Every structure is written in C-alpha cells, then in structure tokens.
Length: 309
Image (cartoon, rainbow, N blue to C red; front, side):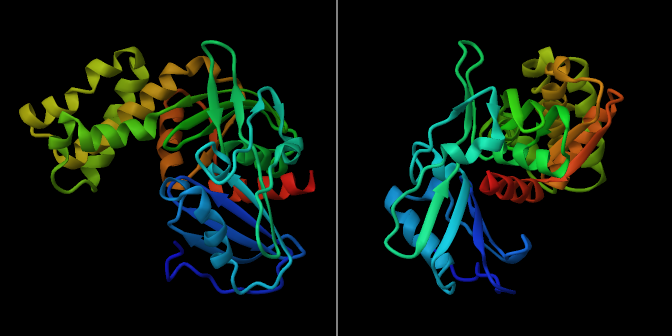
C-alpha cells in the first residue's frame, strides 16, 4: 500500500496526471495546463509487489488531495499481463505517434479516469522481444529531437537497442546486462569477490579494464567472467576493482556483441545519467559519439506526445 513520505507538494493547478509505473516503484507527475510539472510523487509500490486489486487504491491514495475529475495516463508495467490490466503489445515496426490508440482503461469507482499505454513486441521466430515503458521514451525522443533517425540505446536492467525513424520504432533488441550484473554479484561464486568497500578509484580502474576486455572479445564473456574471482584470489584485486570490472565487462560485451547495429550518427543514451555515462565510455572506445538523455525527461515527453495523439 501507499507509504508515508512519498507525497510531494502541489505547486499549481492540475490538468492531467502522468504516471510511470514500473516493476519496483512508480512515479507520478501532475501536469499543469501549460505542460509544466505542478507536482511529483513517488511510491515503492511497483508492479512486482501488487495484486491486480490493489492498483486502484494505490493510485487513489497518491491523488487523494486532488479534486476530480482527473485524467491519468500510465506507461510501463501496469499494462503487463501480470499488472493492473493488460494492454496488448503493438507489433514492430510500430508508429508510436499512435500509441494512445492501443491504450486500455481499467474501471475506477471515482472521478479518476485511467488510460494505460501498450508496449511493443517483435513476433518473428528467433527475434522475439518485448518492451514496456521504453516505447514511451522513444516517442519522447521524437518530441525532444524531431526528425532523429538511427540507433537509440536505453541502458537499464534490460537494456534496449532500438532502430528508429522519428516516432517509428523499426526493430529492437534487449540485453539482460543489468540483471546479469545483479545476479552474478549476489548469487554466483563471484559474490565472494565483493565483500568490502565497492566504491573508490579502484572501481573506476576496474570499469576501464572490463570495458576493454568486453569490447575486444564479447564472444568470450562466459570465460572472462571468472577472472573476477581469480583476480581477487591471485592478484589481490579489491572488491571495488572487481565490481567495476564486472560492470565494465558486461557493458563492453553488450556493446561489442551488437556493434553491427551502430551507424554513422551519434547515439542517444536514454537512462539514468550515471549508468548511461558508463555506456558512453564504452562507445567512446569505438570512436562513437553519444549524448545522454535523462530517462524521466524522455518519459514525460513521451507521455505528453502520446496524450496529444
């Protein structure tokens, strides 16, 4: 349920509400008539913690001090099969400027009207893939940078590589880089190398070494991973170095393994600034220019564009 301490202070009139409902948490933004943020609120009640019946109460609690009627537009995992109400995937290639046409509307017993945006999928045998939430960020990119065409990379738990032409998502690929890092760090034999301080100069040195090896030989990833443990045992590598090496190795192998997707233009990186900066270092080793776009900025721009239809 809704936790104390997540309410933000309302700064002005609210025209509609934008919601990014993820697996681990949700973020909510009240938008004023000019398109500016009137308030923002967050909650740890992500899709992974909720039953279908809990969603209306969570949203109502977050909007409790706002007088209705109010329109709410939601992107992300609330539209998953195991979420609030399934919003069936659009098939790639997909024109995201019509994303709102695939929205679904769960019932509410109050003045709140909810629309949940769909994700996008690829159904071709051997290329099956899905995304939920990132499609809204891609639509946001087309609003922030009209006319952009080329490769977009979205670092995260499941990184996305997408080829786009304006608001048209042509094809995409997912890489489980972030999840692999977490699983290997906490549940594999490598976890013994991470006991102690994980930040500091050694971590940065480890990132560089990992990026170099991952980019040079992505096909050797499973063999190179054990160097994390062996380096700690035989060469006295610090926990910080090992954490950085593992991160750099996985990111480097992701970039190196999908090098054939890279074109001539610069690559927008949509995600957290800190994680995107690591990808930026990897791409720079290939002489590739990138620019970082904050994930929240892209999501809000995409929700605004989707609402306009």
